[in-house]
Every structure is written in C-alpha cells, then in structure tokens.
Image (cartoon, rainbow, N blue to C red; front, side, top):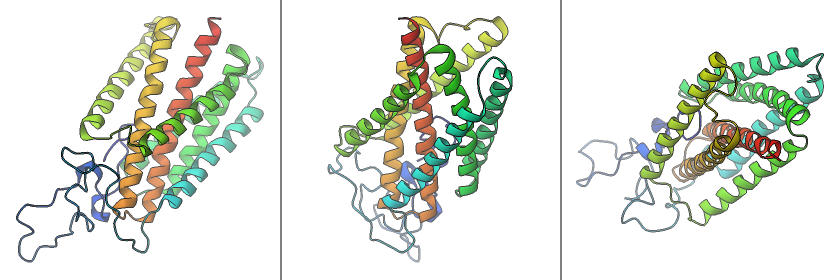
Length: 297
C-alpha cells in the first residue's frame, strides 16, 4: 500500500522484500509457469485472500499469519521504533517550548526558528518518502525538527490564543488513537481498496482547499477564505481530525499486513514514520479546533 498518511507520498513496504500491501498480485488461477518462482512477489501468498482480507467473499477476521522467519518485522519492532520517533518529537518539543520563548521580545525569532524547523522536517520527510528503504537517521531527524516546530507553535497558541489548550489537544490525539485502534481490532473499520481510495481523494481535496486558503491569506490578508476560523473553521477542523483517524486505520492495516507477510524488520521504521506523521496531523487539527472553540466562548 502507498501513501497511507497526510504526506501522500510515503512508500509502503517494498514488494521485493515480500510485502506489497494493496498492490500485491493475486495468485494465478492456473498456477505459476514452469520454472517460475511461485513466491516472487510474496513468499507467503498461500492464502487466496492474502492481499485483502476484507475483499468480497473473503473470510472474516485477520489474514492468515505467515510462518515466522528470522529478521521479519514484529509488532514489538513497530512499537519500539514508534516510541523512539514520538519520543524524539516530544523531547525536542519540550526543549523548544522552554528554550524558544514566545514573549514579545523574542516572538519573531522563535517564530522564524519554528517555521524553519517545519520546512526542514518537510524536506526530510520528502526525502524519506522517495527512498526505497527506510532510513532511521532521516526519520529521527524529521521527528526532531517536527518537534521544534510543534514546541514553538504550541507555546504560542497556549500563550496568546487559548491557555491550557495543549494538554487537551494531546488528550484528544491519544483518544483518537485508542478509539481507532480498538475499532480496527474489533473489525468495526474495514480497510478495503474503496476505503483507501475514498480517504486519499478526500485528503487531497482537503489539502488543496487549505493551500488555496493559505494563498488568499498571504496575498489578501486576514484569514483568506475563512476555512480556519468561525463556523467553517470548526467544520474543517472536525473533517481534519476524521481524516487523521482514517489515516490511522490505513497505518494499522499496513502494519498488520507487514507483520503477516513477513516484511523485513527495518520496515518497522516506515511504520513508525507513518504513525508519527499521522499523529502530528491529528494533534495540529485538535490544537486548531480547540483554539477556535475556546476563542468563541
């Protein structure tokens, strides 16, 4: 599967390493040709529903577990890498909060560093997205610079817009993560090709609208088209959080399939990368939504 988060260009687990997500080939009806390797695209594709356990006619429940093999990715690998990545975000965000004050005397400098860190994080994310293999160094550098941006923006919002909103946004993000995880494990959310296509189309439209709004705000002043304030701001904040929740479901699907089909252990860094970006997306949407709601009180 490809692009299961708001950056839209993150590669999924690689086909040549035994996993291809939604793009894996179905077993051929007549079997492999003479002399061909029947496991060329997926060495564990013995289940006719292996590429999509929720396809029409497929048995319910999780896909069949592939035989364990040395060096294969596990849930523990994903958890540990995600903890390292999110931990890096948290530590740098706390440091930025305390070392880059947003008082009037230092506001311009802090904003400049925060925006610069966001741009650097975006560059690292794009480089990783176009690499065939996961690079832990790039992913941790992305997390570090993303944390600096989050620390500055969170401090500014808490100081000038809505005091106390940051803990609420963190709790909201954790609640969405837990809720989607439970819903996914209980199979209340069914991640299919149709679901994937709908989420990607909706997210693309959402990002394009926000980009247009930003352009109008930069060149026309004010809040642009009003998508980030008032009633429209609340509506688009809720939509952004729902999209983030959908991306979480896609990330969980990718992790589940990677473990099931024996993706290499280093691919767990890609899972951590995607989960971190999705959680950052949800946190920022919560921060914006709660700021609007409390500002209207």
